[in-house]
Length: 127
Image (cartoon, rainbow, N blue to C red; front, side):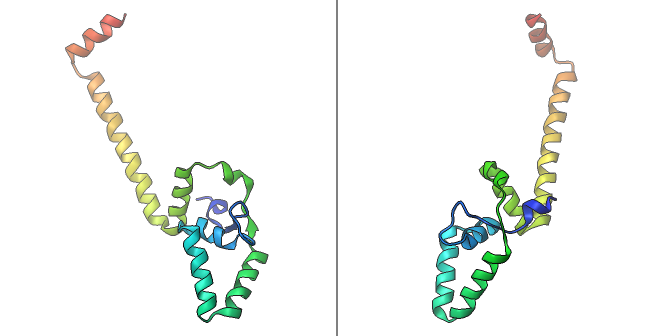
């Protein structure tokens, strides 16, 4: 597992202030609007000084998201969010995909290597 891909980063591309909420949204896979509304509600309900202090501490301590992550496909982003949230489940998913691919390749190999006269005629017709 790549520690670089599972680390929390500030997301300066989608930021409003310093990218903390968009970084949290990217890290957890939650919609960024929900994260922002949650932070505002937490601040207004009673966490006023502590929410802002925590926000600025995270903005000061966290690294910016590397630019190489901007070229990832949406599928790759979802995969890494799953790895961060549930590493065991993502390993099971990858194993299941490989088992499925292996089974499909075995089926193809069986189909090609069996005595299939129709397939043999098709191959001979291509020659």
